[in-house]
Length: 295
Picture 1 (tube, rainbow, N blue to C red):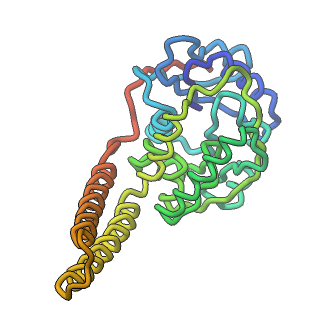
Picture 2 (cartoon, rainbow, N blue to C red):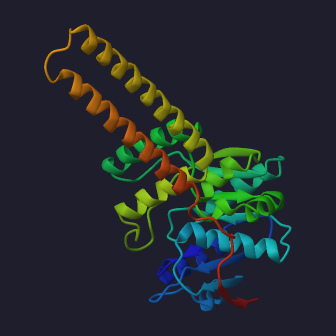
Picture 3 (cartoon, rainbow, N blue to C red):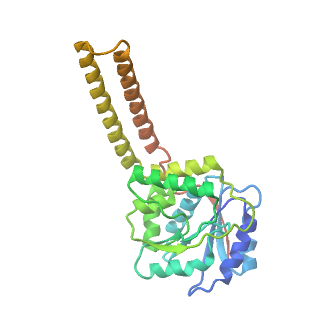
């Protein structure tokens, strides 16, 4: 679980995890995402009767990169048991862990929590719906889940090898071609405070999910741009023919040609921008960290 300046919620979640009746022992890995105030503490494990590790990142990298660092660490040490990924703020209910891990025992590589009930505002749901529609249009895939999920050892190994995991976990799950099953889980209220993600952070998070499918998005946008260019060329040709035939009104010909050239330039710029975006955030899935462990 990634934790950023929310050690109080982390401590409460540790107590909740300890009280969940599971068929196996659990060990917790918290990735401290460069917290300056209220970082997660090893004492939270001890007070809850749990054992665990805290990876303290040297700087804040964002919750997706923090999760990727944890995944890379676990793959590096050769973990061979099931893995649960969840947020530490209380919105992911520990009681759903058993339902997620049960689906892994049925042969699925990944069991993801899809939200049966959401508690966000109307505006958030509206923009989230728009975002999902844009994601579907640009990538050809449906995005229906977030960070709360269960991974098999095989899924852990594959995600650790994908640089896309550092950009967007859910998008990487889709791109990985792993065998995924949905599990309906209600989203709970946060334990304390409000989310530290503002509107700009959410927009950036959405853009990164699209960038996971950069090549597909580039191809779709390039085809759309090509269609626009062809339309502009056809309109310019018609305008030229009408001008030569003497049927064009004064100023109409130059207006059509001017707009056509402007649109073609804009589509070319858009294609270049998307091409540049596909090359961003490339790198390994592991950041720099310090290890603290108890139990």
